[in-house]
Each structure stands twice: as C-alpha cells, then as structure tokens.
Amino acid sequence: MGDFDVTERIIGEAIYVHRKLGPGLLESTYQNCLFHRLKSEGLKVEMEKPLPVYFDGLYLECGYRLDLVIEDQIVLELKSVKKIKDIHKAQMITYLKLSGYKIGLLINFNVLRLVDGLIRLRN
Image (cartoon, rainbow, N blue to C red; front, side):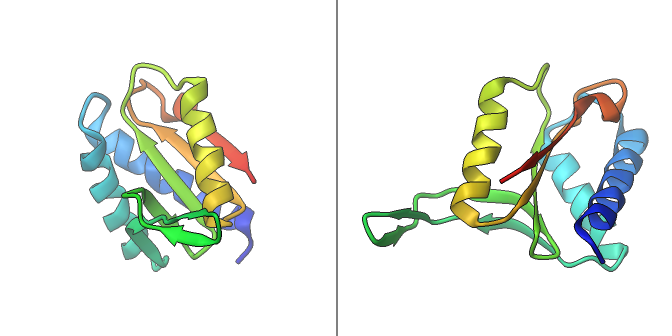
C-alpha cells in the first residue's frame, strides 16, 4: 500500500471521528478514538511513540512522543486548537527530521470541517 493510499485512509478515519465527536474536546480524546478506528481498520498504529533526540553522537531520551505513527511511515500530530500556527508546522517538520519518517499529517480537530484543519507535510 502506497503512502498516498494510507494517508487517504487516515484522513477518512479522522473525518469519521470528527463527525461523531465534533470540535472542542481534548486532543487526547481524538487521539484515542482515532487510534481505535485505525487499528480496527487493520492498520499498524503506534501511540505516544518515544522520539529520542540525536545530539553529539548520542540518542537522548528527552520526553518527546509522537502522537500516532501509522504503518511505520506516517506521523500524525493531533491538535485541538483555535488555529494551526507556524510553530505547529515547524514542530512537525522537526519531528519528521528527528524520526526519519517522510510524511506527517497535522490534524486540528477544533474546526467545523476537518478538511480545514488538515495539513500534509513532507520531510
């Protein structure tokens, strides 16, 4: 299955979760519900995957966690904020660089239409 196919499935499931729950809830609620939906669709999903920082030849555990990693290839960073800001995009790009994953989906559930809260980023 290609990256595009997987991202389309992820987006479809995120839309499903958003339609069922609506905006305004905690990020962790959307994370757990989306984790459940993606797992039930047969995708490999890791939640709160540790992200060490490589610095001066060492891997350091600094407490960073990736919200969701799908099929060992796509990072999901979930938000429930008024508006996605440039710092959120920069954070995702940094996560992609540190992790080595190529594709990131930044998803803000605090919107009326989920498509307005979706941003795809590439490393």
